Length: 362
Image 1 (tube, helix red, strand yellow):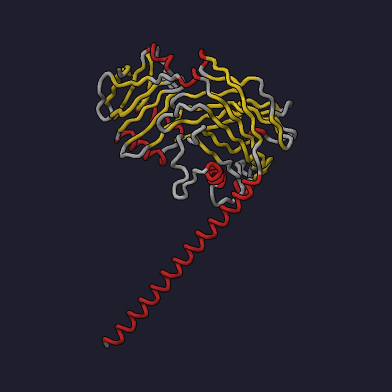
Image 2 (cartoon, one colour):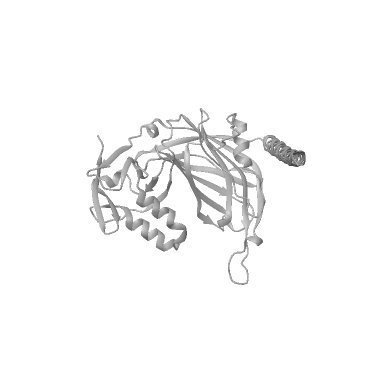
């Protein structure tokens, strides 16, 4: 009887060993395929040389941005691209980028991939274009740019980025002239460095189409991607000294608020950024998935908002949980010019309402 049991256990152990070996082989095969796939995409990316252009920036102090002087469209594949302006503060990088096309399509659905970095290969942000309708396995754009710059980290391709968020939108569309002005804005994790040069690489231009179903709703099954160009545009700019003379203002609460711990509050020419800890607020954020979007936004604003002495309620630009437990980062559309109006933080939990001024932390 004992021998039979031992034989059964040996068979079980052999089967387990075989299963483990198969899983290991599958894992190795997947990794090999991944590397072959990525290497192939990089070889295709590497073949295309960027057309390089150096632009001259003139800093407009009152508006806190630099205008690009005398730049015309740089044309490839019958598509022109030029950069009109750049703005950099400790917490925000933005650029106005213009595109001119030779064909007509739904310009609202136009997009592109980009990389922003400086002379020390500090990567502000790399963003891939979403090929809606295509099944892409990896973020080929980020991997290829990092390999091109020699900063690729296989196990953490996004960890070296200085940004924690970005937005882009086609703000001005002229269908007669077939032009699109795209506003690109990148938000820093901590603070952007005092770079001497900035590089903007534009590539992978395209758009998507999507149709509505019989109920009048957009059907993802009808979505398709269209590539416009695989060309690369590389714009280089020397940063004006005035743009690096940044004066970020650090703020603090004039009086502590129960249940809300501010770890950092900064104010620049572009926004107010608050890093704080609040169990009540993060619980509300966690519950948001079960609350209708409009109602959820109102609840968030009711619990925490910024106002001034004139009664204006400032808008949240972005927000999200960060690292530590109950930690949150929020960007507000208040700027240094608004500090003279006296800024207040309002925090409400249950029936308790708190209000205190934000003052300079000198």
